[in-house]
Length: 600
Image (cartoon, rainbow, N blue to C red; front, side):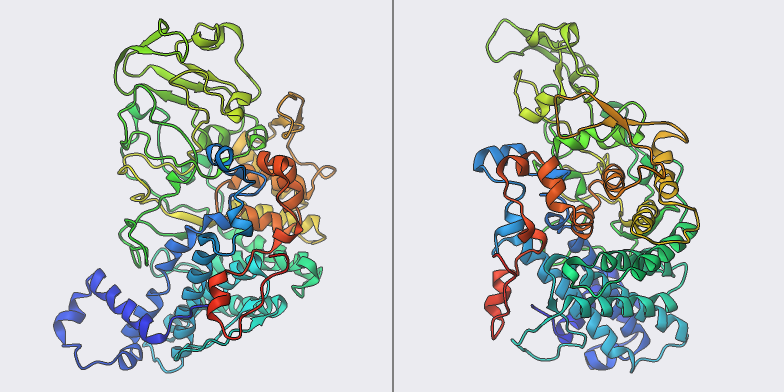
């Protein structure tokens, strides 16, 4: 556990000052005789210390191997699994030297080191406005609680330093999960009392953010994983209470797709206006524009920017494309949607389906007499700019006969891929991509590559609070402001499909041969944890929550083995994996070595 000392943190926020251009400070007086201790004791210095706690959130959200792959809705990329024969993101479950563990462990504890320094120094700092100081301390307590929440969910009992680290120390003691949860709730409760409803700068922590996290923490503790969290049924009532506060303060936006970057499915008619990430539904977002507290990712050579557009699969380098350009940008073969995920949607009425999955690739330049077929050199095609090159059918309307491509006896001169062909990875023609893009976070007109995106990442939004409330009620909470669990659930669904519309999904999403359907509208009779998890999959796919939701509800192994194609095939996932292994580098550098989680 590498907790950074105060001196190193001070160096970081002095760099922050230089990078963000505090010209008055730099020109009005020489800082050569100002010590870090004296500077942080001033209001301006303490403000900078608090600001230094925010940049790591950008690295924080890049730890997606903890949250996405190896669940029921995301698996390894098809090519990687075929190459190595592994199960779902096996590295993120069993490899104790994997960067999938080393990265987040170190980042979370770096954040804790900074927040501990800020909290330890707060007592000796005087602000002109005491409420401002209280708010800054509240921000830091929230950020520390956020880090510990992800740590304790991922690894169980973890070290829990609460004071500033001022000297090297190899002694590491794992604190019980129950004590970690008690500290998280203490920090968040104190933060909620002092945080403002509206932040002085957009992007800072607010009262609503603390309430949202309290709802999720109480809900998680209520489930009381392996009777180790100190939870009780009363926690579900607290979760509902805080979820209701968030719902009342953060109304849903009318349309799902306005929560994400505006774009057209056809790059030839691409949206070119300003992108606005701020809206009524976002409770707390990690910022990526330039006018924020900080604008860099630390400890990395990556360009600053949101690169969630590139961590999902897709193929844009098809015939008729322009190569590596911003027209479709980069899609890595990671976080492959499971076959079942597509089948959990009604493609005809659920607006989230069309937003989340790119269904058509268009020719961006003319192509003449392209050799279409692997086996028949006489089979050639030509495209004009704007012609369709590839089309992926919805799962419930597979193409047959003349509606297939000319290579399969049809009349279409573009590749037509049915759902079973997408999953099998069948390359039916030279121009075919075997999977569509999962492009929920795709941002147009940004430089090709991983980074550079400027759209904020919404870590908390109120649509999730509705589902948290529904889950709490299913677990026994009473007194919901909106009524029963089905009411909360349907509020989220109504936005996606329309009020009263009855959407149909595959009754058995895991059975790719079945076309039998069932409604996914909630009623008092059918509302259940599984129904809520299905809706969470549709609404929140890719939003850094899935593994934690499945682990909390005790559904990870069951649902991954049922819906994740590679888990189902290889059987690599078991109850052991409900806790991740302590990184080997942490065991090596502690003295005496801290204990490993069972089974690793």
